[in-house]
Image (tube, rainbow, N blue to C red; front, side, top):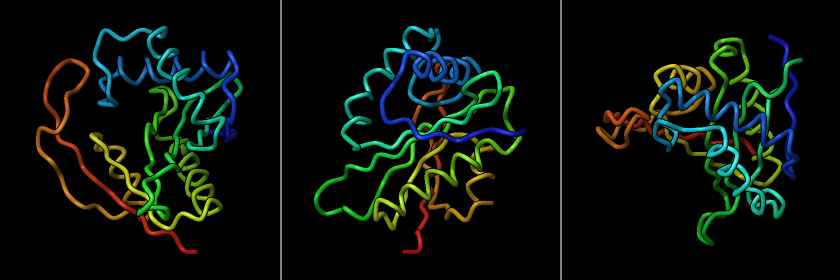
Length: 172
């Protein structure tokens, strides 16, 4: 799949609509990304809108993948960290529409996020996931698996799920 990766620094209405559609699709598909079913696009839009101040201030770096139909995926980095961790960023909400999975969108988003982290002077990235498909992607891209915390979170339907933590050291 051919997609364009774009960094979003201010959320336009079209961005909010596309991001909300991706988030709502992932929750509807059972992804453990912090939200429970039922979950509406309006709720997803409000969640993304809440990130706007951090994006505009540069505390977060948000990327979207787009095809001819619009936004098909997203990932963001939390760049702002405590004083004793200026070298680190958290990679979060790596989300791809179900129709666009396993087509290279996730890898393209990860590459963009890693490049932005390097440009921001970050040398360590961390993430967590409850997705076996995502685990395979992260391992393929050189991330190191730390371990699993059993029953750490809930799936959108209320069932417990394990969470796996990964890290990646970036070359300077």
